[in-house]
Length: 283
Image (cartoon, rainbow, N blue to C red; front, side, top):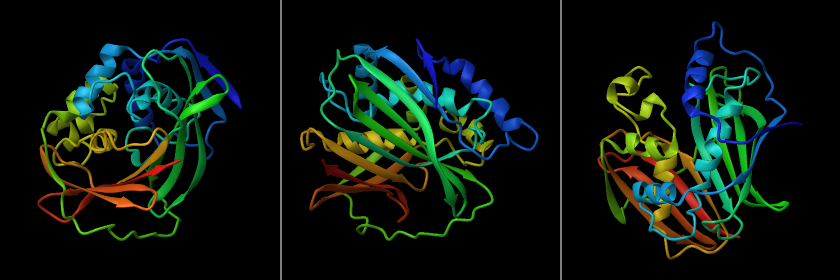
């Protein structure tokens, strides 16, 4: 594997135009294999002001412990750098984030120093195209303390078999979310994820959406915030993204206990259509 070490976070302002150009290449980017490349950044620390801003936007309390979704902020620039490389087989624009699984091996505290590692693996067929995983890790010493597996779908030429999933429970809500129309822009400010589908109705319509949509990782983080005070020190939170949350939105949030943790779903409060479903499992 080729290891590419970077000494600062890659510039998202540079990478987004690169992503746009990659999506406009005649015939696509081409290529059939994921690059055997790992991006690595050492001596990474968390900015307390940035953590506070993230917690505020996502609904977490202000503490010295990082929410399990926060390290995704540290890994995201490296993920972007990896997926905009010339040898990456798919254009970033139009990619669909279909699943995210995060494992926190122990509580992660403000003031710690980490190495962040990002790579792509597990290219496989999907009924609607091709899917693959982007794996991100926070490492202290030789051991990962946090692992994030983001599964992306590139649409077109699907050969995988369909695997329909029944809803976990009827959509009887424990809470109703009133999601403001500007949450895409607010989350973009803290995450750096300025994909135009999240920012404004006009730019979202260019990509086939009737309005801007919420970031999937915001919906996951806001879901996780509902469990604060009930989470174990080490756990996995696994979410599948389904129908997008069109902004502004009214969404129904449902939770229930399982044998090894919790399960939850987010639904459109006006129609029985799921936005996501997830589980929290103690390690």
